[in-house]
Amino acid sequence: MSENLLFPLKAPTLAAVAGTDQLFPVHRIFCVGRNYHAHAAEMGVSVDKSSQEPFYFTKHPSSLIPSGSEIAYPPQTANYHYEMEFVVAIGQAGFEVSEAEANELVFGYAAGLDMTRRDLQLKARETGRPWDLGKDFEESAVLGPIVRKEETGIVDSGVITLSVNGEVKQNSDLTKLIWNVPEIIAHLSRFYHLQPGDLIYTGTPDGVGPVVAGDHILGSVAGVGDVELRIAQ
Image (cartoon, rainbow, N blue to C red; front, side):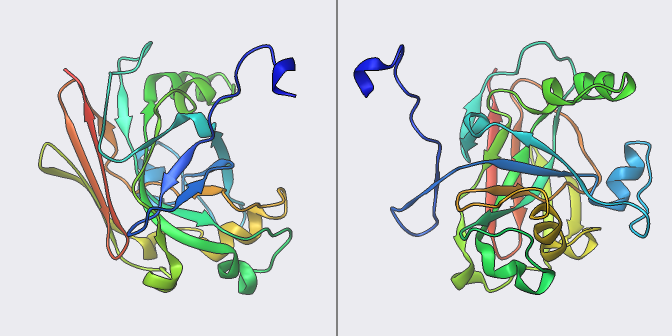
């Protein structure tokens, strides 16, 4: 069959698994929007869990890069932001699962960065257009090593922080997620047949802000691990 291809197939996107030489093949990347009240407020909106459902945007797997990468400042933006995130890696298939069953789908957890062209995102939001140009672009999803659930247990609390050049910018706790991990998985699985290899970026706390060439970003999720990124000069 390969001789019929017009051009070579791209290599699959693979993520590191902490403490092993095994690799996690990435299938899809789902991101939860506005999942901390304080972050929603700093973006000029409010979230009422009693009357609203979570919403999502996606990033293509090819946007994923490993922690420790150094990348160029992205094109067509003058307001490039970090967003620190707790990431859930799915290891079992599931459709229309209950919240009680949701953690059974979890393979492990990681620290991640949802890098954002904020000016393009806000322009799209103001005009009612999709967020793709602001969110889904090359090298916009950064991921630390995935830690197996067997090693961490179920993670439902812990400090999540981010610093830029050693200065703390984000500092919150996973208990402040508006929709927790079982709620997210159960809700998302109503719309998608979740598959091994799916990643869910669960949302960012308040304190998001811009970075420039030469900046060093370091994020951490307690009990899970770190994620690191440098913006080249």
